[in-house]
Length: 157
Image (cartoon, rainbow, N blue to C red; front, side):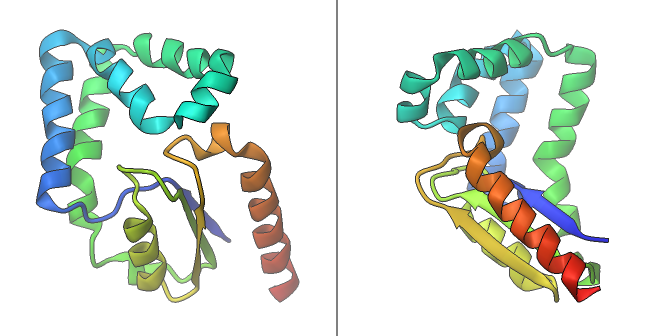
């Protein structure tokens, strides 16, 4: 068994948690699509948005199509659950790879480092020049790192 965490959150500080809960409040009042533009801005670099508008548009369409009945409870959990898991990552003994973009403001490099340090068999990779949508914006790099991690883990078994 192996674990890969891509652009995950961990033990947000109070200001970061308040930003997420403020977006939740906006989504509750005005619908999930009301936070879409800000998400796109946070998730993609300007260079990627300019070079690949069709890829960004796909993500935007998915966000705008969110069903409030499913989205709002999930976002509520997203906004609060990381605090409940803080201090428990040491229980994860499986080899783990924790990754995020260097410019990700929500799933920060600091969070990724702290997660990897909290797990006994984890390594951390921070991808320069990338924000939150690492699987979209840096798919080639992500796949190469996944392959190296999974093949390396297979050899150790």
